[in-house]
Length: 234
Ligand SMILES: Cc1cc2nc3c(=O)[nH]c(=O)nc-3n(C[C@H](O)[C@H](O)[C@H](O)COP(=O)(O)O)c2cc1C
Image 1: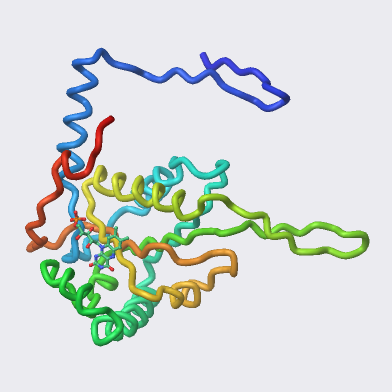
Image 2: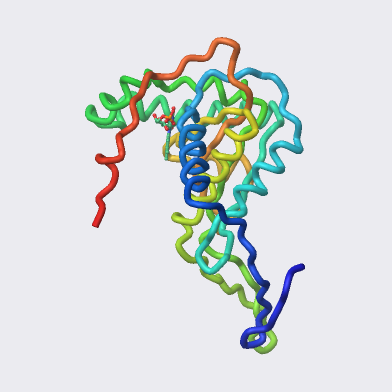
């Protein structure tokens, strides 16, 4: 039974979070880590279709993320249309060709060598869905000023942080559904605003192909940092 009350006129609900004994908490945290540790960025996709409802649930999960002042400053554009996927691939490959052939400094190119990535982005057409996350820097509102209607840019807060967390949730949801994803950033990404005809208040954040892994799928044998390398305890 959910209890409700008003605080300064605003509705609150009683939050009953399920908790566990210490041993069970430890086991659950370990199990979750081990399962998340199986997530990999995949670049070899199958074209096997994914039910639309799965993508809807994944996006709803992303949108459960915390956000500055609960503005949820994100739009997830879902591309399944092969014509638009091809357009995105063409534009991404144009930018990536420039990046790999002069725009990226030698150090960056060297850091990418273990991943064996290049300017070719076949997966942008193979993966059944491309989820393009846009960050919304403000919400356009019309306000009346006497007889005139004026556009007010209602700012969102901590937009990059909020979208980063939401995309983290999105990737976890994709992993949980048994699917794979690639976090892709063909730089600069402005072409995505044009291809998808997004409004001025939205800026492309991440381009995430989603689907099943190809029958033969290879990922770089990367090692993750251990706890001592990533944490400092006081
Ligand atoms: C912000 C961000 C941008 C990335 N951009 C690209 C990209 O443009 N192309 C690509 O192949 N991988 C990209 N990646 C994927 C990383 O290369 C990958 O996460 C990293 O190598 C670790 O591999 P793992 O995800 O399998 O642990 C990106 C990842 C992040 C978080």
